[in-house]
Length: 226
Ligand SMILES: [Zn+2]
Image (cartoon, rainbow, N blue to C red; front, side):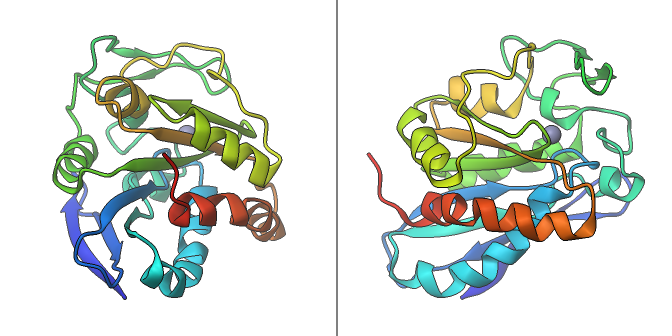
């Protein structure tokens, strides 16, 4: 059964939705899947919305409840920008030991990272992670076509690489100060996968990307790993 677990408002009157696919057991552990960190990367939300239908039935007999944030950055999505409506790179806005006010990105150009946890979207995700205490987290971005991980997630990342044919990397080649991966994976030891999909250039590419990642995302949600 799927339900709306919570919602949080951004600075622009948009809502960030937290959905929950609930299973039948009382003592379930929780997983968390996130799309739309960056507003110009619609692939993650597409994958998660399609995957919800497949998971609704499968999760009933799995040991996990699945929490899903289809789009963390609705103001960026509306403007089709990487940053949110305040011009902040949300995936560099976390209060980590390595926080930097500048988000360095050789592909898209540098952006502001704000001040630590200055954004409503960041505060909402921090609060939800602290409340849900997910056993593992999947954050879907585009368009580097790799699987990256933070924290104790190597086994999980290898499984996803095998299921998708995507290459596994140890980092994406430039500093990611104040990232959600650092905050949750490295500093809180929550196994965290950052899945970077291929870029959907045309509408039909979304379905192709979904099909190539379907098994990896499904197994992320249902497999019991150490
Ligand atoms: Zn991204």
